[in-house]
Image (cartoon, rainbow, N blue to C red; front, side):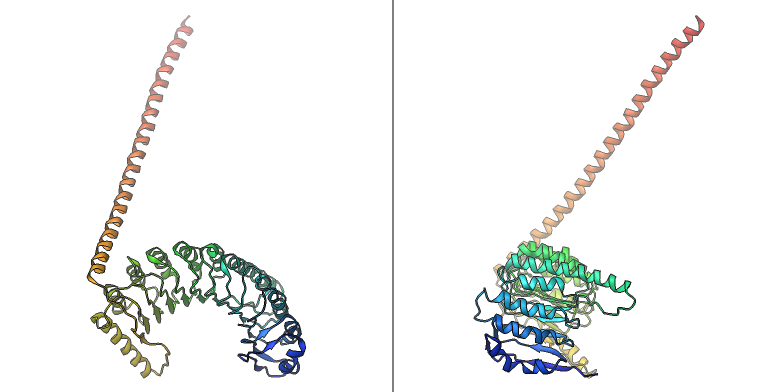
Length: 445
């Protein structure tokens, strides 16, 4: 039995492969060796004839586990991409060990996404999908998300069939990684993505940075989709728009992810108004003790927000926290609470080193772009918080008043029904008496 060879790579060579004659000199090893576990064609530009030549070479790699097809259509016309992409992806469908595919930095807009949609609907072994900077837009993004929902259904069917076939021992993996950043997904595709995440509850890594998703879309994504992913370990939604509306949605589902290790909500207007308070309140519930990294840069978080976060850490709710990114917020680097947080993380790093642990990210990030909050902003925030508290109080009072009115209304209806019952009973008694009297006189006659 032959041992699988690790990697075949043309990565980053800048080759322009238009025809089979251009391609053959660079792909001879694919013809002679059939045991590669990883192939990278990234950083070259492939025409449709070149992809047609590559297709049978790829389909023969039965040990292949991962393939990197990022940035393979630079300078190609949009009309060239669908046939080229179709040749490559169709050749990968028979590969039952292929679980990971990276298609980043290729133009998969509405005119070119069809071959990818077909592949995603069918490739049951898919476990890790990376789609960064593909220019999808909300409509093509919806098609991709819908394809992933179809994939979930087909995976489920395959597991049922596998269970009914005692001689079949193929493992059907769950989709665990979804990276889809810088794709302009926007609010318009969030319903489809929410449904896709709901159908893939075993996801562990979700990264959807810089997609132009605003508050309603964030809420849909979290409340309809990601809340079902109870095994989530990494969530990165940086550079979208949360505000306190999205922060409230995140805070409501955060306790549902006990395995979460990394949370990224930087550059999301997250700290404005009550956002950081909601986050800290959710973390204080003690359901996210596995968190190692918090990415909170550029969120207008002030010194009070840092103090609240420090309190969460000091109270022991984040015992494994190693890294906090806070650059671009509004506080002084010399703030005592900032220094205390820095010291606490440094002490943890030293303890980890004594245990022999090696961690790449630790401590606070570099504060190269801090802003100091002026007194006017501080007063404005205090007034905003007071107004928010007053609004919350008024809402609670209205709820209580509404409950009281409902109780009174129920009482009135109940009393009316009882009174009506009594009136009917009295009326019926009088009618019975009259009838009895008449019957009595009749009998005497």
